[in-house]
Length: 305
Ligand code: MG
Image (cartoon, rainbow, N blue to C red; front, side, top):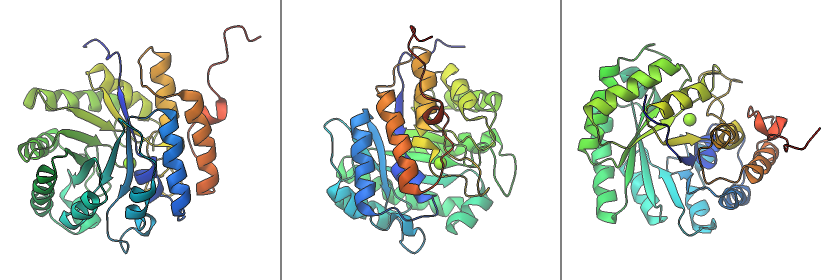
């Protein structure tokens, strides 16, 4: 076990991964206000939208408008998810600071999700990488279903390591391991992180944890123990799980921040401000969100009775 990192970077994915997977359509001004509020809470990285076909994902149909009108804070990286070259062009036109691409570790999931083989997806990533490189901005490679697939079940470690190697070979600045269905457990997370680190020692790794079965924070801690210092989370736990209606999806950012800050690990995020955003987020999506800290509150002051 390595020493725990002193600080971590959190990518707030609520405006994209969160809202994209909510049933309702959140209007453009509210999306912009969400980003403004997240800016104020101190995030250095915000996934602000997805440049994807509006037919495939109507929730993100206003991504270009959001990018054009959202307040940009100095020093903050605004990430755009792009499924293909067309999306990458649109994201670059909208002045995204960084691109994120997704490939599934599971052939079946990739096929059912975007109707492409993994090889076909990697060819598309190659095109995205070339555009990002021309624009002089970094891109990250997300590996979805890295800890389990809704169709194939267990995913072999070697499969994920192989994909990491391919993505790095194409120029990914970082690789994110996505627990798309929240099936991962802490030992599995530690083992996979170690396997990737062994094969690709200099690869910046990120964990995209889901809390579908209650293992989200434990998985964050397991990765932290292996030296991972970059995590995705969604304010309030917005988003849910596309494969289990009603279940939790992304780990709630305020829960992750609470745990880390209480452990003495700096996140740069203002927790009370974030809790307020999480409570407000319930209004814009019109449902109770699964994050715990927004309901329980943060630790009482030491002098409280
Ligand atoms: Mg997610």
